[in-house]
Image 1 (cartoon, rainbow, N blue to C red):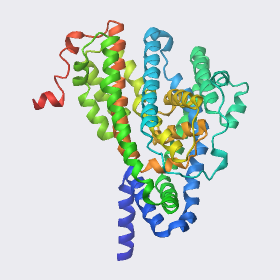
Image 2 (image 1 turned 180 degrees about the vertical axis):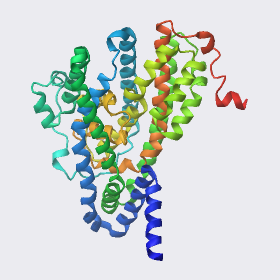
Image 3 (image 1 turned 120 degrees about the vertical axis):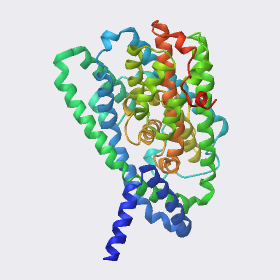
Image 4 (image 1 turned 90 degrees about the vertical axis):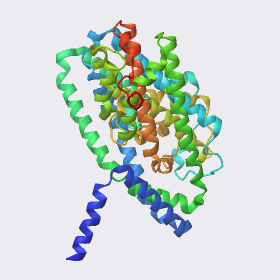
Length: 427
């Protein structure tokens, strides 16, 4: 009886833990097992391989269905006209800038240099890189079914976006098809949730193998990765976002920084852009003076498609993994990373484990080994706090710019923004 109670207590304890805690525990136990077993830790690698295979299984259907649902969810796309175009353009543009910042930091500081890890899956190694023109021409698939079967992510993204726009333009006749895609997308979200439950065990197996084969030297660069992601996030908000507000909006960026404090703090602690949405809308209206109409459209769309912080994280981690495995990336690979992360952000926002899923897309697109996912998974929660805050700050910045351009920004409120923020309450 006592043994049964103990087992139930252990089961309840594990069940109550959030996923990031389980992954962290799996990483630590994997490192310990790898140090103890040494090269014999190879026997644990199949556990990690199973998880990697499950991630690969998700990529194509998840991206395809999610992107279609993301586009068709903007039902007022024709009515919104200018606002929709401005919003999407700004979101995609800021995401591209964010990942460029991440790539720049990864290129300059080389966090993965010297690890000398070996690619075990030959098929995942980089092939001869296509030229930039070839990359552009190959964006449009000659055979969409072939692109889906081959797992060509960029072609799948372009086809899904095109199909989504076509469904919106079809109006009432497309409703049955849209409902079907929404159901399939929900099924993929649930399947993703189930697969992510394997993450602690997959990380355990892969980290045991990594630590057993390469020793503890692999852990030191992770501190560098964390530092680079946080520095990049600060640069994006304090330099890039404030510059856009000053140049395009002719607005005082300090007012913006005061107004975003509340939602940024909530996003940092909850690591959920969607969960922070009520606080984001409240701050946009009450602290930044954005109209109800603009904030009601721009911010929910941003919570779905805008992932500045996540994109920045992609850039740092992709280069970290490339450097760790000694893989040199061509200029066209950098362009591919920027394009994939920017477009894929539309379809993967709001999905459990979105950061790792997006990173798997980037790695697949440029031929980097997915084994690198296990190395960064253990610190994903630490990185997630910063990147979610940046996602929310980017949403608010775009809402202010769109409101200003549409003459739907109350500048008397904006210029007195932050009156309800934490800092002002303290002061």
